[in-house]
Image (tube, rainbow, N blue to C red; front, side, top):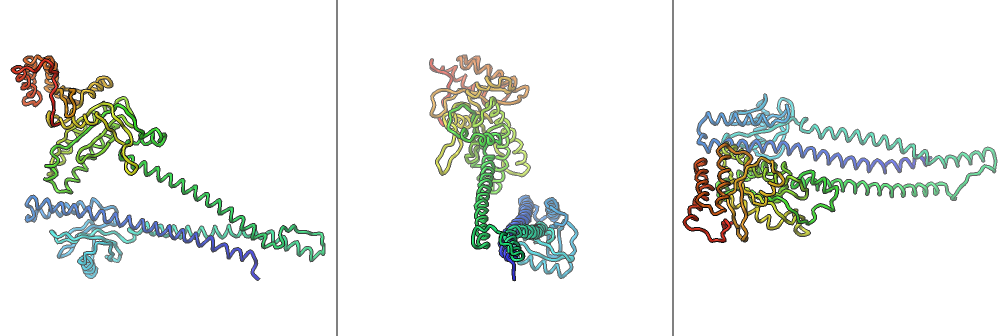
Length: 557
C-alpha cells in the first residue's frame, strides 16, 4: 500500500520540477539565441566593414586611373590584407580571398586539401549571404563571404565553430547544472516538507496503536475535524493560498521595481543625447522643478555651414552623411564640454544654449569659448577632408545673450525642451551676418556687455564691426567679432580699429578714415576696415542726417 507521504511527494514534485524546467529551458533558448545572434551580427558587421573598405580601395584606384596598373592593384590588395588583419578579434579567426587559381590573400596559414577546397568554392559560388560551415584540416569552421568583382575574389571571414559557439555551449552547460542543482534542492526541501506535514497523522496512528496495545481509553487525540486527511488538505490549501498571495505580491513588487529601473535607465539614456549628465541627476532629484516654463537670461548660439546646398550637390549621399556625422560629432562634443545644451539640428545648422535648465555664472563665457573652439575644430576637420579628397566646410557662428522663454514646448504627442523669443531670433541673425562681415564668429552687444561684467579677465579680444538693425527691428545692435589669441599685427590693428569706430560714431569721419587706413596698412585686404573706410569717405562727401546714430539697416538678414 502506497503511503500518503509518497503520494504527496509524487504529486508535488512534478508541480515544482515542470515549471522550473520550463523556465530554465526558456531562459536557455533566449540566452543561446541572443548570444548566437550577437556573434553572427559581429561577424557580419566585420564582413560589411571589410566590403566597404575593399570597395573604397577599388574606388581610389578607379578615380586615380590606377585600375590598369598591376603594381597599384597589388598595393591595394596588400592594403586590404592589412585591414583584414586589423579587424580580427581572435587568434583562430581567419580572413582569406579565393581567386581563380587558389587563395590570393589570407591572414593566417590555411591548408586546404583539394576536396575541401572544391567544396568551399562550390558553396561560395552559390553566393549564400548567411552563415555557412566547411571543414578544413579536420576542424569545422563557420564563415560568411562576399564576392568582389574587380579582383574576382570570394572574400571569406571564418571562425572555428567551437570558438564561435563557445558562449552558447557555456550557457548550455550552466543551464544543465542549474536545472540539476534546482531539482536536487527541490527534492531535499520536499522531503523535509512532507515529513513535517505527515507528522501529525503519524502521531495519530501512534496514539491509536497505543490505545489498541494498552486498551487505555484515556489516551486522546484532539481532532478538530472528523477526517484527519481533510484537515490536512484544508490546512495545505490555506497555506498554498497564502503562499500564492504572497508570491503574487512579491512578483508584482519585483516587476514594478524592474520596470521603474528600466524606465529610469531609458530616460537617462535618451536625455544624455541632449543634456549633460549633471542636469539629468538634478532632474531625477527634483523632477517637478525641471522642464517647467520659465523666463530667464541665457546665451544662444547658431552655427551654419556656408553654401551647404552647393556642397551637398557635389558629394555622394553616403560621403555627405559620413562627413556631416564627423562634423557634428566634433562640434557637439565642444558644446557639451562647455556645459551647453544642443537644442536642435536645423538641417546642417546647430542651435545650442547655455543657462538652462542649469544656470552657471560663466554661461556667457562658455558659450563664446565654444564658438571659438568650434571654428578651430572645423580647421582640423577640413585638414582631414583634404586628406580624404572631400569638400571642406566653412561655417558661420552667431551668438546672443538675452531673455527667452525656456521649457517644454509642444503637444502631448511631441514636446521639445527648447527656448523661444526675440533673443533667439537675434542670435540667428548674428549667424546670418557672418557672411556679410566675412567673419567666422559674431557676438551681439548684449553678450559683449555681459562678458565685460561676468568675465572681465577672460583674455578674449574683441573687435567692433558695426551697428546694425536686422530685419524686423529698428533699434541698432552693435556687433563684435572675437578671438582667443591674436598675432602681433592683429593685436595692434584691432586696437586701432576700435579707436576708429569711436571716431566714426562721433561723426569724425576724416579722423576715423585715417585709423582704418592704418589698419589696412597692417592687415592688407582687411574687409571690415575697407568697408568702414569706404563708408567714411562717402559720409565725408555726403554727411548723414543730424539724427544719424551709426545704424546700418540690414534688409535681407
